[in-house]
Length: 114
Image (tube, rainbow, N blue to C red; front, side, top):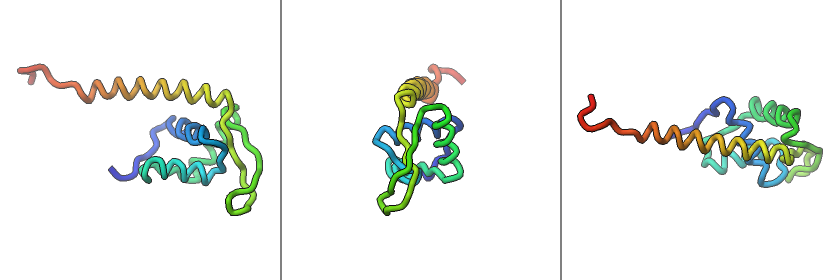
């Protein structure tokens, strides 16, 4: 499988998960996702920054200015306690979804069924 598209509602979970590894600026979040998925998931700026701003408005991430690895000013985002709770709830829901969907995909017809 080549690259995968984000399903509606999954981007926030992926961004929150990336931030559990410590504060990151937007490009570092994008790189973490690409590296972790061997390039199968790629977050473009047009999706990433609106997601970060949305998560900040909801109180799931906080941000502050700092210096990047290249000594450039960058906004660094970190997950908040509320963000960790939200991530835990979303991970639980996704695990249930994957288990349920796995049952559907793994179902086999009864012997003799048409």
